[in-house]
Image (cartoon, helix red, strand yellow):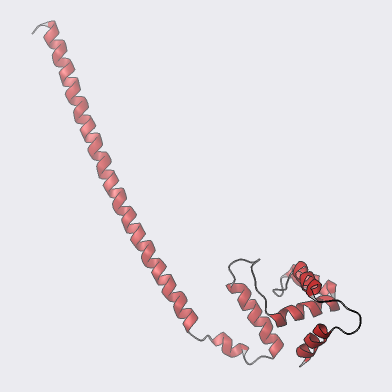
Length: 162
């Protein structure tokens, strides 16, 4: 075999080896890609089934009358209001997006007016889900201020003490 034929043979063999390794690498990549796709599909199916199960459990919890409501109904009205507000606070997703009942806001106002120190202490200790000071000041600003008796305030106080 001549020198040129030897070099040509060597180059041809190298090219064949490269193509063979390329095909093997490509086959390995497609194989791993198939495995990853399969795992992804399985994970998605598992996630969807778990989400469905969670939604069913939530629906079941919402539809069943809870024992807590029966127990709370035996309490005095102001304690019922406090417990229901605490439960509403627990159900609330955002701590800043809480909607309070009118009666609860009135109690917050009365507590804040009666004792600001006690109100601040209860807020700092998170004893009850009390409205913020800014919200209470918004409510007070919304009440019309005139000389003499304020009918809105008197009606609210009368309703609170009934």
